[in-house]
Length: 281
Ligand SMILES: [Zn+2]
Image 1 (tube, rainbow, N blue to C red):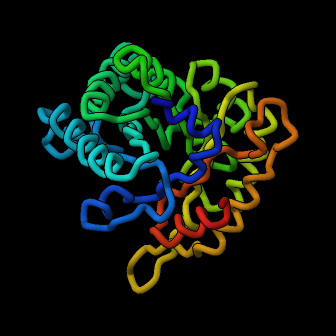
Image 2 (tube, rainbow, N blue to C red):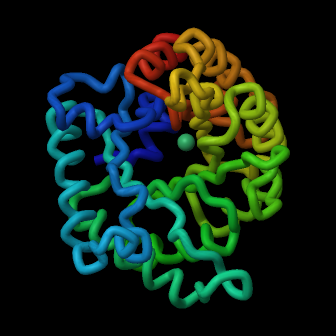
């Protein structure tokens, strides 16, 4: 069976699933609006994050169950892949926090082993700010699930850098060097900044690395006491169209696409993903 990375190279996988895809499917939604990537709802599934809710004893159980739910949906839709989602640990690396390279690898290994046992096809490490935390997570994935491709994306939400000061160009080179198969950006401050980030990543892309961009649908605006994201499906579709052409002349770009996979992050709904899918098709 071909891996998700093969599927991207062959041009069969171009669209990420946006926020809450698997939750909506659990609630009975039949289709993923054109996505072939189903992300598990395990963003906060590492031990320190679950400990915030008194669930630190259930790391294996919850991650495995989440992967199994997504697996069952993917199995009903041939050609669809499960991305086992891994978010930041919530702690900082030493000296600013208490994480060491060893403790970080251990906590990510525990979560990733469970996602793999539950049937994930690949691991998605996302919304990262610190390259050493990314490295710990990629190292963990390679150690406990060596057969699974690794996607890793950072959030460049602070003047086109991550909170820890990493630039898009530095990120794509460093993360590719760690051995990730697919590298990119997620979350952030909407498509206007994301297209700049995508351009910088595409220009610095090491040969053979696939790129993924999963932008927030606009920025949150306070409306009637609630934060709402204002990015429209049309805006996301225009962004996706533009992503096809970004960096297309750069060495290493695959199959006539600049950015290989386009998804979405906070504020996206099935309508946004359907619009992205239609734009890319
Ligand atoms: Zn987000």
